[in-house]
Image 1 (cartoon, rainbow, N blue to C red):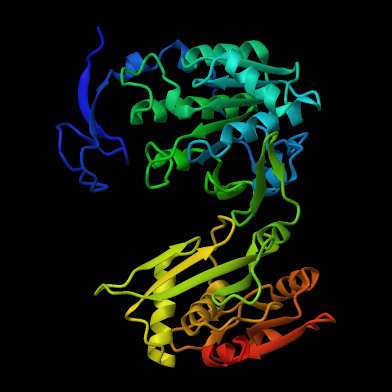
Image 2 (tube, helix red, strand yellow):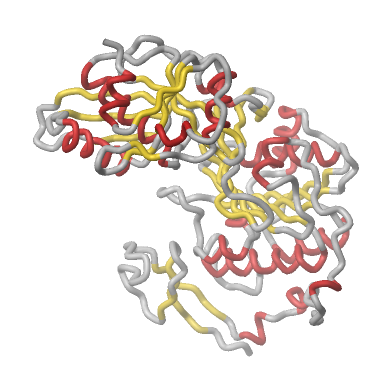
Length: 457
């Protein structure tokens, strides 16, 4: 009889302890230690786990055979862009996002596009019945005979389905609902998620099957389960966006087969997710003209520039501590820029509430948006509007200088395509290239020069 041991595992970070503790010593979260039972190693290594285990050989890298088809075209350009060109056979991909953001919708549309090319696909759902899957597929107009569906949560049964159908792509929705019968803990626990993911990884590598698993997220926005889960998979994709906005952004935070700087932009409609070929046009639609506190910034997302509108509101407060709120950018970055404006340019904002919003639900992470943030804040503070056809980008230093940014040619070219007449940018970015015709480039050294050129007198 197998010996059963008890242990307590943190459901947030996976820390293990022989006794219960109110606070996890690793992640410092309260009430996350849950009791789990662990069987002996000889009992865990049952026949089902040994099915796909093969004895590997050591060979020179020059003698490793190349893949006949390196990538599969998913039929969705924005998804191909984020994946690095397509779906790699034998890869394990984790897709995470808030509830209702559109993860299952995107994957169901992907199965339909691949099925039209004759690829056998297995879609396993642990959250929906077969009738519910068909109902959603009919709404999305994504029904095809080569898509095999199953409503199952037992991973050993899923392995049997894979052996019988021999698909090229397997989708597991979601990994938190799957359980391995040889692990005694409940589905969704750290042990179950870790074991099921490890088993799916072996299946993907040994059989050359691409596997996409859907992961739930916590209140903080991170993928639920142990952090090791993200280290085990080949790619981690986050589906971002507000549920009340129609735009969705697919972002890669890890990708062994491509860049992690690419994003895919989608729009949620009644028929499902629709690709957005020109995100700048969508994000700038309905932009107010001549209103203080609004600016347009050119941000680089992956290989393409995206023009996004920033809106700032600076208003007096009666409280001792003013509010600093930011949506779409790091609020610490906004606080730093406000400190530079107070120290270097004399703007007294200690008694002002400051709110900053990136229109469209996009998140901007690069430092090139600093100049647009500073101009938006001062524009709202002074109640002076910026030019309707002005574009801004540049990094702001702590001494008030404007530092150069990368890929300035692509930013300016996108500005010209969208009809902007003037671009305010770092003066060092004016060297070494020929600007296009029809746009005025204003190079600035300091934040004071940029504000003098930007604000309408």
